[in-house]
Length: 142
Image (cartoon, rainbow, N blue to C red; front, side, top):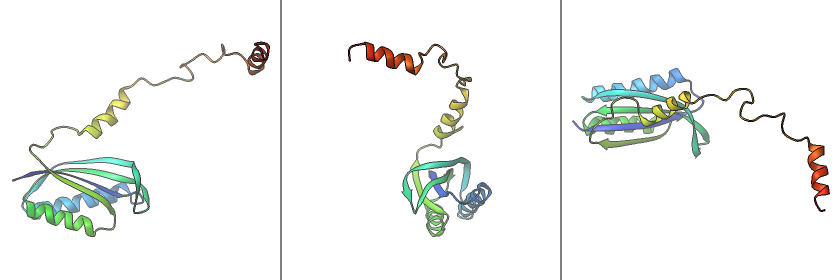
């Protein structure tokens, strides 16, 4: 069977459990069509580059699917009918990606960075006071 990756964006004003319910509904549509969903990733509530149906944010979900084309067509039809879905994108791929997707890897890599402490990025005491800077600027040649 062909392999697909499908991403959909759900409205920002629905809750995370409701997004999981939507994901399960679409997985059931695929299962009824004779396919299977090998991976479901919830990317969280993210900003959208431009307003889509008056929404600036959306819940992003990725599905890795192994299903016949008819099942994919039915899932896309159900997504287009659903009011909670803002956008969808389904592409056919040669092989499904194992492990976390690039979006999940980038989210995890931010956590690996060292945190800045309380003002340790620069010493604040060595900075000249504003009055001193103004007097030096006036003496300099104005």
